[in-house]
Image 1: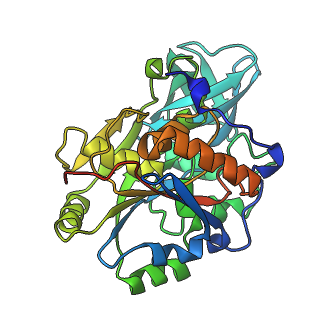
Image 2: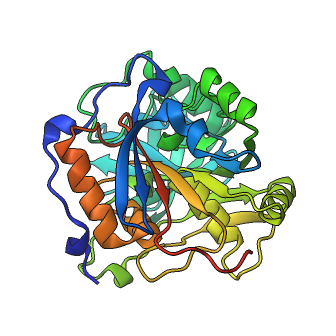
Length: 347
């Protein structure tokens, strides 16, 4: 299986550069993986697609202002992008500088704080902060890490719009973008429909922006991301399955969190890291439907939705979305996807 099998042509003008005036004003392409058919719709009509007793699982991570600027002792500029925190004073960062950083080097941040390079691994460095905490440094010095395909500087409104309305636990460097479509009116409509919701936490890391470098899909190694699936969420999923309801993951991050926690066929509470890579041929143990945005060509997230609903079906749906002028990627429109094959067993 080659990464080129997951390519499609996307006119650059379809990549959304700005959020819509209203979160729940987005379009939504409804894709039935079993029949291979789709229908144009709107995110506001999501409650009509769901049944009383269904369960939405959302990712409550909070995006950090994760982009920082620093200088080497020689004066050279360094741009840092947080990948994941390891504690108050240690974390992994993507680093961009004229010459590569090396273990033992020291950097000075904008407000004078000093950090040391402890390790280097591929494009990432592990940095130790001598005083204070990374969270406080990021909040005071950092800027919102808009994705590289948004070709403008972060603005004040991005601090609110590149964040879900239910964001709670700080730690992500990118938004779980399927959740950006939800506002209070849509959540209220789902409540009125009798749709329940629970949360998982997966802190999206900087690796989400890195391309698949191997030609063979199976040779790609996923970046590590930290997650938490609570016992409360596990019990809610079990109750949903028992009453015949569906578990709908809001976003690929919620999907990967649940599928990590249920990877061996039994869903359990989980705290730790995941490198789970879902591509065609992999089985989904937990989710029954998926709400997601449109993903980059040849990306692991496009491979995930192809694994869920079938590659031929999904690529055809993407071609339709291009023709129908949907808005793509983080500030773009949504898809509601049901699987290619009906699941015979319940986790």
